[in-house]
Image (cartoon, rainbow, N blue to C red; front, side, top):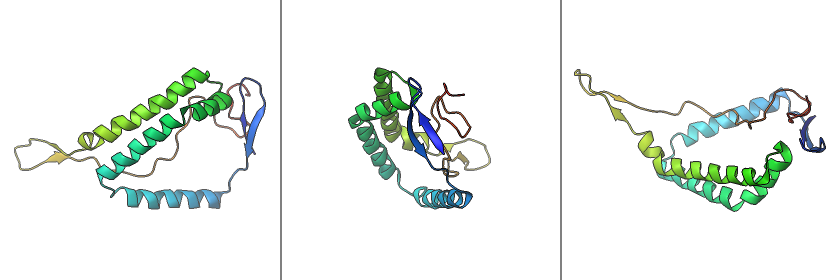
Length: 143
């Protein structure tokens, strides 16, 4: 079992069953299939998804803040601010992503050349600031 521990109280918030190797392989295969499909998605669709996510993060910042406080011990004001910061980042990339990833011409004197940014695969994990490996606890206070 994997436990989420409240770092302030040491209380177990929730436990999760570990998944087996076959399930992990299935999840990775589905992530790869999604990547292969989404990599062809036009920028305007991606920007809309990021803008929608920003709105969701803002509308749910109180609930998300409570989860961060409970699971990480982050002060509630800082947790709400983190949700708002993530919304800001989503909006930034929604507005700037297409420009940032546009082809960049390079003068070589030998013809047409450019730098192109292309997706390379699915993101495996996003880990919180206090993530630690191990099977017993996700809390930095329970070592």
